[in-house]
Image (cartoon, rainbow, N blue to C red; front, side, top):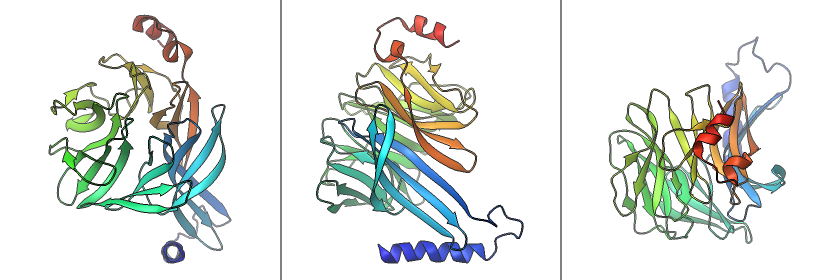
Length: 306
C-alpha cells in the first residue's frame, strides 16, 4: 500500500509542475468524488468507489473503495476497504465481502477478516461487477484490448466464464434481476445508449428502452416490478419504469447530473451518483411510496410526474 500511495503522490507532484499560474488551486483546495454506490444485501451499508484530490502544499490524488454505514436513508460512518482505482463495487449475497476491480483483476475483500483475495485475472479490463442474488454468478463487463466491451458471467471462484453478449458495440453496467435469471445492461448497439435485457436461458438480448436519449445504469427493484436507470432525455436524471415496459417517469429533477442508481434491498431507497461541477457525491433518495409500495396502475403513477 505504501508504494501505491507514493506512486499517486509522485504523479500529482509531476503534474503540478505545469499547473497554470492563475489556476484555481493557488490556495488550499479539495475536489472529491464518490462513484457508483452499491447496497449491501442486508441494507446496512453502501459501498462506493471514489477519488480525492487535494493540495497544496502537497498535491495528492487518491483512489479507493469505501463502505458507508446507512441509517434512515443517510450515510453515516465510513471505512476504507481498498486503496486503488476501481469501477463500481458489488457485494456477496451474505454481505460479508465487497467485490471490486483493479485493472484486469476481479478481487474480493472480507469485511470480517480483512482478507483480500483475487477471484480471477482476465485478458482485459474488468468493469462493473455484479453478484447474482442467488450467489451462483458474478456478472461483469470486459474491455478486451482492441475488442468491444461485452457482458460475461463467472462463478464466485473465477471459473466457468461465459460470454453473454457478443457485439461490436459497448455493453456495460450489468444488473441482475431478483430471480437471478436475467441481466439488464446498457448498450449503444442501436446508436444511442439504451437498456437491454438478456436471459441466461435464451441468450438473445431484447431492447427495453429506445429513442434519441442515452439510457444507462439499470437497477432492478427488489420485487422485480421496476427498473431504475439514468437518462439524459430531459436533463440527466434517474428514471423508473415498470419492468418490460417503455414508458418511464423521472424521479430526480436537479440541475446537477444524477446517475448510477442502486435500489435498496427493502425497496424504499435509491442511492445514486450526484455530479455537481468538479465534485461528485453519493446520495440517497426515498422512492415515492406510490412506486415502492402501492400497487396502483402505471397511468396513475405517470399523472403525478407530468
